Image (cartoon, rainbow, N blue to C red; front, side):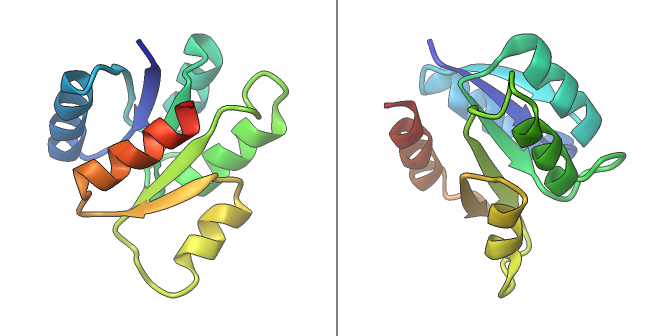
Length: 120
């Protein structure tokens, strides 16, 4: 069972997304801010990280930079999740080290398709 780390501060988004991902056959580990996301990634070594970019404490951009700079977590794919679909946001996410980008509200089947393509 592939393990996903979901880093999301919004409780409603977190609960809905984690339930749906579990139904798709994924194990889901949760973090509610960027620093907890970094700590959980180091501790649990997930197969993929879903990273909200607008987070308290440490935002998703900085959390991703930290993870991609560390030997033990740099190879874990990170998909940025953001409500900011402005020109430049995708590039900003990719420059921070994210491997892909998806907008909120989440189109669930598109996201699952992206996750599965990284896990092949």
